[in-house]
Each structure stands twice: as C-alpha cells, then as structure tokens.
Image (cartoon, rainbow, N blue to C red; front, side, top):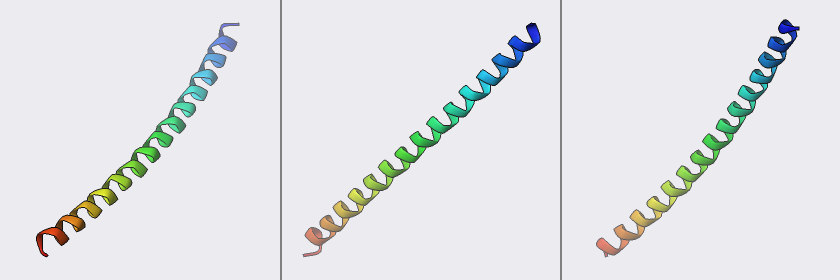
Length: 55
C-alpha cells in the first residue's frame, strides 16, 4: 500500500514538474518577444533622434 502511494506521489510530482517547466518556457518566450519589441522601439527612437540631431 505504501509503495503504491509513494509511486503515485512520484508520478504526480513528475507531472507537476513538467507543467512547471512548460509554464516557464512559455513565460520565457513571452519575455523574449517583449524584449525584442522593446529593442525595436528603442531602435526607432534612436533613428528619429539621429534625424533630428543631424538635420
């Protein structure tokens, strides 16, 4: 009985770990996309400032 319970808990823990890893990967992907968007905005701002400064 105890072995079955431990086995069940181990499987449950592994399942939770997999879900957490998937969640972390999704968050990392979102963070990466947000970073790329911010960098593009910064690039555009710098280009605009260069046009204003070097007119």
